Amino acid sequence: MIKFGPSGNCDNFYAEGFERTEESAAFVKSRGLDCFEYSFGRGVRMTEEKAASIKRAFQKADVEISVHAPYFINFANPDDEMAAKSYGYVLDSAKLCRLMGGKRVVFHPAAQGKATRFEAVDKTLERLKILKEYIYLNGLEDMMFCPETMGKLAQIGTVEEIVDFCLIDPVFTPCVDFGHINAREQGSLKTKADYKERLSYMIDRLGFERMKHFHVHFSKIMYSAKGEIKHLTFEDQQYGPEFEPLAQALKELSLEPYIVSESAGTQAEDAIEMKRIYFGGNF
Image (tube, rainbow, N blue to C red; front, side):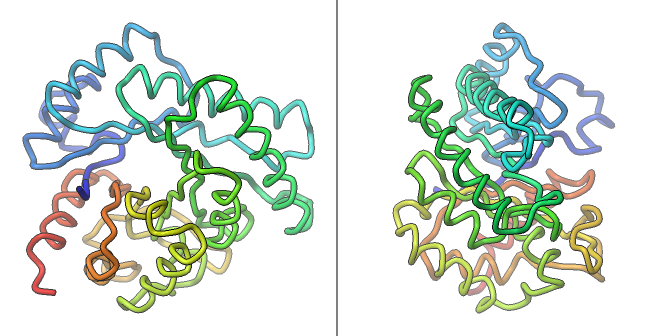
């Protein structure tokens, strides 16, 4: 079943006096949402006791939880020792995600740096093959590891690159950030056909079963010639993308992803709006 929810806590969560992640579960559920993404963006720092407490709260509310691994992961880092840390960041995120009752781990693949595009992508591909081995060695192959499409031209993570990474092994499932794609491609996502073109490409290469419950990040994003600048809210009228044509494409392709709103401060409200559009649209 398709799921909708926020990435982290929206401004209203704190305005209403809530603070703890355990409270996020009931907050999300009370708004008719189905999932929540917890961010380890600035580092994997959480006790096992805290993870178990979060698990109890989210299971009680019947809300699925996922995690985002640290933002500074870079599998194209020219320094082998620094790159090795990225394995730990992903694996540590996955272990805590499991303790929290989740099974999806989103991560940014890499940055190009001073290397050529080919060199950076090739290095990332080889290191993700090593990550796959670590995943199996740690008994984490029942988790979903989701490399994300990225919004800046200097980052590794086009649709094609992410598909190639996911072809390494079934433990990898795409995280498709449509705001990132739109920013990277200078406003390319406007119509249902635009979305279907990219989704059909992924289905053709990965297979329908691999894509049926893929991971989605969605928000409007300001961009420049170099790609993503910052996340916006659904109130913005200048930048896209719009969700309705994506909802149409998902229905026509029979895809039921886990959709996470990454709007700036209105994550929950915009997740509610996406769910309303999806289930209430006359299409």
